Image 1 (tube, helix red, strand yellow):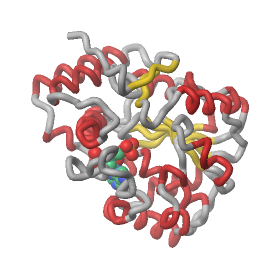
Image 2 (cartoon, rainbow, N blue to C red):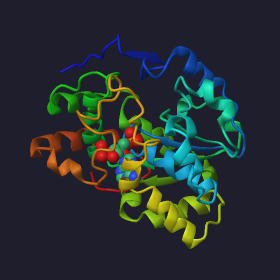
Image 3 (cartoon, rainbow, N blue to C red):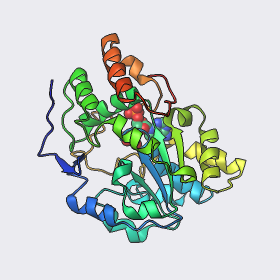
Length: 290
Ligand code: A3P
């Protein structure tokens, strides 16, 4: 079954599919010309892998646990997306060291990223949970195509007929990026299981030397519950036509393994066989079993 995607809602940029509501040709070109500084920090994710979690974590880690940014600046301005429209508007307001997020695959990173020393944290999540999260997100986001049935959405997801394309391509591009000590890999599952330990790793990677007291404080403010209650992080400031939390909250469930409540055994077999085939011959191994 070949899937098509809505030309009305999505834009194609060097083979990448992005929603028009949040991205434009200009914003994508702006990203290409963006000048990375050596002390910039970038969190990269395939959508639904923990992006807004990193928008909460990074400012706290970089500022010794100071709560001001997460309580006063909406997440999309506090740690903006490299490729989205609002970057041009907020870029001059970013405090140093700047933190950004991106859903770009490695091959679309701007030249200045590659020549800078900016550090990058690549957050991975089990693709089955990504698909579940994305399915609900497509129901609540007015700027994304209706996902159809769960089965139909799985076909689209596996074919890469969704925003930012195939999960396997995205992950392979970053796993094979050879950025050495500029890149750190972390998983959503690791953060969900032991957030303080994950924060210690992030803080060490960024050279932030946080005390144990600050680690505990940051962990508390980055918990699912705290973020649900933070209006600067839960997207409640966005009009309902764009994000309708009555259909499904953005901060939906916040757990690892929700796929078990959604996949039939037939779907699981199909999903696993497609993904494992696409990862054949790769030198890295996945942090979870598929
Ligand atoms: P679920 O839909 O499975 O709940 P992104 O920010 O990349 O769009 O990812 C959104 C997913 O991350 C959602 O997953 C959301 O609930 C989850 N998430 C965000 N903050 C979280 C937190 N503090 N703890 C656990 N999960 C979180």
